[in-house]
Figure (tube, one colour):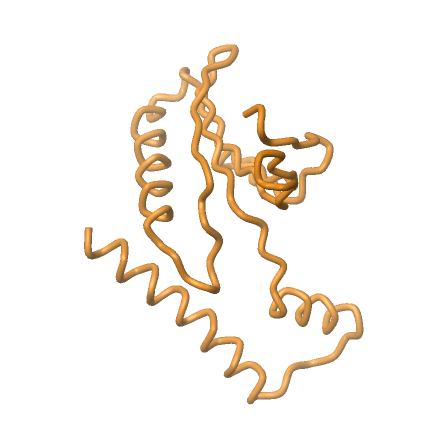
Length: 139
């Protein structure tokens, strides 16, 4: 993971139930491109760890097949074992979208969306999900 720089204090999402953490970082080999590191951690003592590892790898492969303007591309997937844990690292491009900025601004200003605006947002989301599903189900 030498070409990626992450600060473990710069975590912006964590799900303790699924042992997933997201960190912001950069890819030094791609002109300091902003990226997100998605870290899955599996303990070998878990009874279902093999199944969970397999599901995580399959999800990464499926996501890597999807290329759409409203989804993040997976740039890299790496595996490592450390102190009795199996770690799966997904490196994704960091997308700062107009949609993300619009939602953040509306939350900050406590401004509701109109029905037309919500419909437009839903079209973008639906387009990405439909495209992703078509790529995953065609394999």
